[in-house]
Length: 123
Image (cartoon, rainbow, N blue to C red; front, side, top):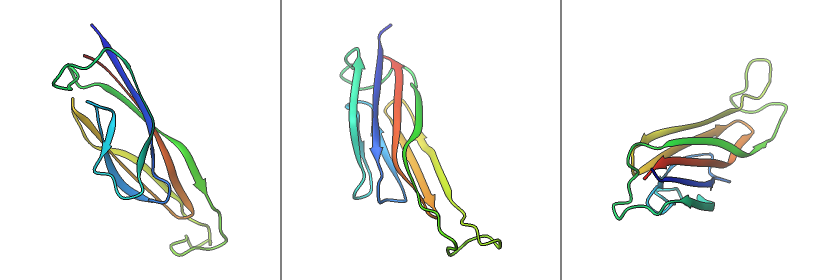
């Protein structure tokens, strides 16, 4: 059984919330908001069949690669103690044999700037 590995990172700098789809057939991005792109896209392993599909749903990993944190004394939406409330979230909204849709959001003084991914499956 042949394996294929896709990796890269989504550059989300300046876009505090959004979603984008990683297409497995060519390791590219679609449906991303303006200003979001893909960096260091690499593919290793067997060539994909003409259909561009993994045999089964592949395994994937997402992680924050770069994060900006700006601390302030007081911000709108701060807790009653005057401390800033930062939120960070990475999630998937759709995942099948063809693609993975990634959702991210950040708030307060923090911003997710890059999200690493790795997708591994048999072809």
